[in-house]
Image 1 (cartoon, rainbow, N blue to C red):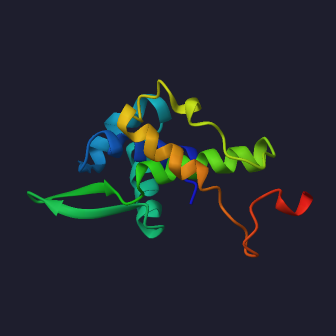
Image 2 (tube, rainbow, N blue to C red; image 1 turned 120 degrees about the horizontal axis):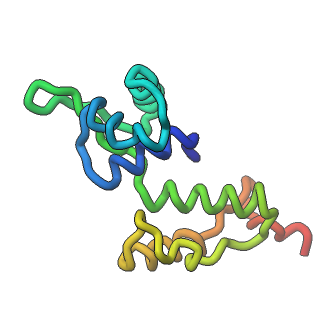
Length: 132
C-alpha cells in the first residue's frame, strides 16, 4: 500500500516518535501540510479505516501509532516510482536513500534486500520477463 502524501507525512511523524495524540501529530506536521486540526483528525480516521495506524488510550488520551512498517512502505514507494513513473524492470538502487533522515545506516541493508526482491506479477514473472 502506497499512502497519499498527507498520510505519508503523518506516518513519518509517527516513525520518528510514537505514540502521539492527534494534537501532537497535527503540531508535528502543521508547517508541512498547512491545514486545520480537523483535517488532521479526518485523515487519521481514514488511516484507521485503512489500517495504516492503530489507536489506543494512554493516560486517558487517544494516541496513534504507525501500523505500516517504515521500510516496507518506503520500498513500496520506490517500487511504485520505479515501475509506474520510470518504467523500470529492475529495482531502484538503495543509494537513492543515502543521506535520508528517515533511514539510518543499519536500515539501508535491509531496504536493499527488500528492493532486490522485486515484486512478481500473478504469473510469477518479474516485470520485464515477458519482453526478454
